[in-house]
Image: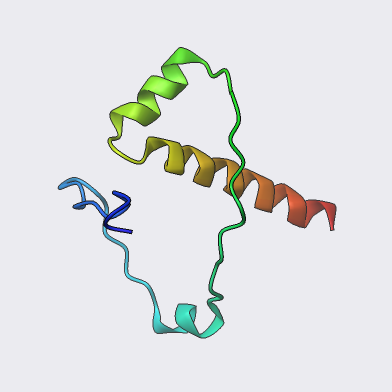
Length: 77
């Protein structure tokens, strides 16, 4: 992950969260599915906001889309 630039220092103003030990009892490992390259037109302000967050903005955009997908997939079941 470090070679791919996915490990970064935490921003100084990032919030800190305590993770209870019980969380890890039910945690399941996640294996990322195969990636597909696409051409995507985005609103400029949305793209610039993600880009301003620093390196890894496309990975974060994918994470947001995955969260949306997972939430709606569960509703459909």
